[in-house]
Length: 135
View: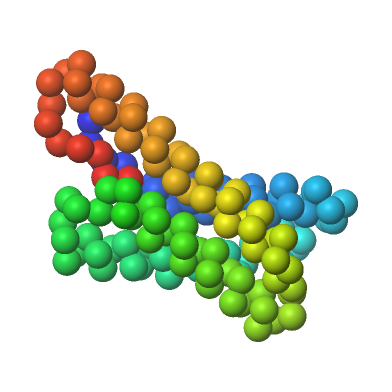
């Protein structure tokens, strides 16, 4: 099984950031329509875009070495840039929100990568192939 394409990885991440925004808005009784989701999600989607560019740069410099580092390089900048943009636009960055966003996006952005790596490792051991998955 070969590693998923960068586009597929990015698409999964985008969906998870939008799900994070939807859960947050719904938990506060806010509109979860397209405009509401866009308002909440855009700072984190901007961070996600920058983080994926960072991962591409790391992979160019260190091919086949990204692994878990790629997940961390997506998660941390997504949260950090998202919070900076929220602060810059007056959207609010209460400490509790920073903690919740960091934990939830960590579980989302690292969690699916961990599951994919375990599935890949399991398939690899059953089929005797050696290449690790890069997600």
